Image (tube, rainbow, N blue to C red; front, side):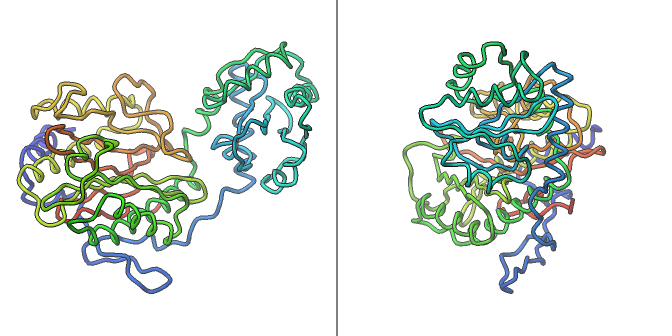
Length: 434
């Protein structure tokens, strides 16, 4: 970044901006119009695109092939996946976790296999998108013997089974007893090597989820009034996201002093005159997540609120500018923290200041590896997706967080949602089409 750009960002952070940040100018004359013909609110340029389709069988098969290639590179003979995003990512099987083992086994060579209780087989098969090898067990039987049989039938009699990071403890314990000839290793080199780099189809689904959340913000923010509780606002936001097509909508709403704590406190006050309202909300489309935060004041913001808001926005822009292909992900956090320290915040994670990392990976899970955090050496590359949320928090006053997600291309970062340019117009707009 050249010196004039750096000076501009610092100047923007030190005082209320006299004019909007040019790179974030909101189209105030546009409004998204849905099928009902009702506008969802000003300031949002609609996708103007149909809802993206679910991930297809061909893409899932390509994912399995990629995983098998990585397994061979890392000397892993099979993967065992529990229900959750990893199982869904590779197989399309959407299931839940219980004390009864349901698992997908991906061998380094050959077709996948599925283990599930006998009475669950019809439902599991209904969830499957490909594959025929489903092995069932009755309540008195050991399901880990079926895992052993699947890998043996693929010609694998000894070696290493990879387990992803969220696998529960009873699974390696059961494997050790039933299949002692296999060691257990982390599957992260494989699962991360696949999931960290999103395809265009995945990016479109994440963009669709972001569009829904942003339209919901445009609808809900003008409704926030003095006397409303955080739960009141949360109810409005979740309902709006669900009605607009978002799955599993969620919202965090922090009012006044609670906004100084990134995830809130047990003490909640209703919205008062001049209070900061910090909202952190999201949903999913076909399993892919949005995560957007907005901070605003119903009514008129005071000078301290405006200054901190503009400083956060400058930090967010600096993070975006720093996120370039080939740079270590940790460099993004380092650049923002250096800016904030030059403004008198910190040092490091101390408050008043930025008390958390600058951003996290995102995809099918709201938080995925890797992060914009000091010390993270993974180089940025096309297909990676991150939140960009360098908030500022003062435990004795309030906090401000702006959060928009971005994705990496070979030419640099692109916004899913473009941040707002002013605390007075706090919604923002959609980024360019994928």
